[in-house]
Image 1 (cartoon, one colour):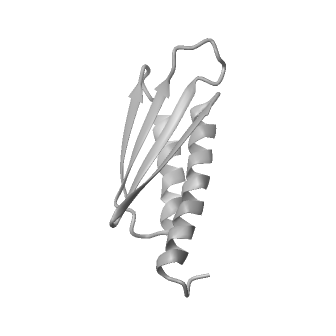
Image 2 (spheres, helix red, strand yellow):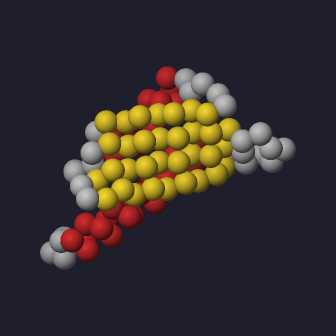
Length: 101
C-alpha cells in the first residue's frame, strides 16, 4: 500500500513514519484492496495537553474512509484510527460479501 504522510507545524521523524507504516500494513490483513493511505499529523497551538491531531484517509476501490483522532501523542491517535478503520473495513467487507463472517 502506498502511504503519504503530511506533518503540519512540525517535522515527523523516521521513527514515527515507520510506526505508522507498520500499523497501516496490518489493515491489509483485513482488506487487501487498499489503494493508498493519506496520513495528516498536526500540532495545534493551544494550551491543551491533547493538541496532536491524527487523521487517516484510506482509499479503497469506489470509496474513501476517513478517521480523525485527537490526543497527547501521535502514536496513540494513529493506533486508535487504525482500530476504527479496521472495524469500518470489516463492516464494508460484510456488506458487500455476506458470506464472509
